Amino acid sequence: MPSSRMTLQPLDSGALPFSLWLALLVVFSALGIALRQVAIPTYTLFVNLTPGFIIPLLSGMLLGPLGGIFCGVFVGMSGALWEPFLIPLVGNIALGLSTGLPSYFRHKIPYSLWLILCLIFAICIGGFFPTFAVEVFVAQIPPSVAILSASIDAVQAGLWVIIAFFILRGVVKPLLNPYRQPVLE
Image 1 (cartoon, rainbow, N blue to C red):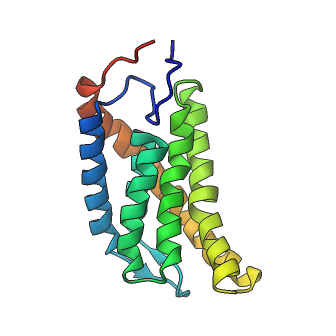
Image 2 (tube, one colour; image 1 turned 180 degrees about the vertical axis):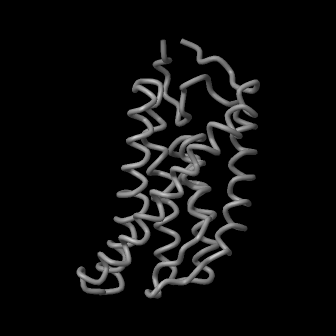
């Protein structure tokens, strides 16, 4: 039976101790900053292909919405040093939030529904909407052009979230399961 006490961590198999949660946030943020520097330019100034997408997505899945947002801020700020400021910052925050939201309710929904929600949210909330919104409302790019570049980020987010599922299930969770604390009622 899930706990009724509020926490921002996913509670599928027990909460992580705060010190481990914080350490994971720091490690994921550093890894995300490093991966964010690997960027392949596309036809548009606002969108780059980068493996840095995977880290905020993975943080949201493992650490919940708050962990995903914090990791997104750090990774996004590193991307904002080299690219137009708002796209990487808003985009990475949205990536962390996109998988963090369904992960917050992971203990209440079936695993397959959680996977589907993470995929849909990553594509829409993490990939398409931030790029589209910043391009249209801030950069004043016509919506018909913004749809094309936002679609690149949507496809990229969908591909990276699938890889993040395998990394989470095959590498991260087996390493962290001994450290999870049972959820108290």
